[in-house]
Length: 251
Image (cartoon, rainbow, N blue to C red; front, side, top):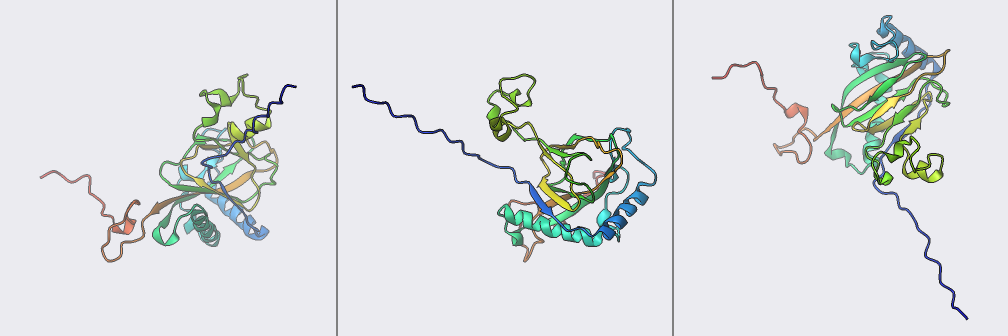
């Protein structure tokens, strides 16, 4: 009698080094939202694109980049910043040892057929998007995130498809070799992510609705120096900086 050969143990795949995408669904007040969208329309001053007709209007390229100072948005931005602190804590940061600074805050309006091209935010450490409208269907244009590196495709370039050997319709490909992740806009949704992550906004396919959102860029530094102690690992607090006059003549 031939002895049976034991089956090999089942292979398991362990996900490593996950990217932290923070999401908070807030209960937005319809009246407040209507006032905020009206204020953004006024700030647009009749402009509709950036400047290519196919690109959504973004306030940061049109002089509207400090929305947190606008009276209509002060309370909302303060609320969003509280969740930014919770995001840091969720990543393991000790809040008392970092200072979080809001650098820029600007509105984005996407009309039918408009997109925002692939990019990242090299000026910041943490970025966020808050949606004033959207029904969760993705019709008004999903926020698309791209992986920093496709380690699991093994051979560079295979994960993007184009009739390669990785089956894009398979659950395994979706889990381990997804070329991107799409997030559908939903009114009251706050999204937080590392600023270095490449992202884009897909075309607004809703001919009857404009998509309104608010983008935010934040930077981390050390807290303001106490007792003259120098900071470690992080840049010093801006309050401890001294601007250098670049136009000064050499002696």
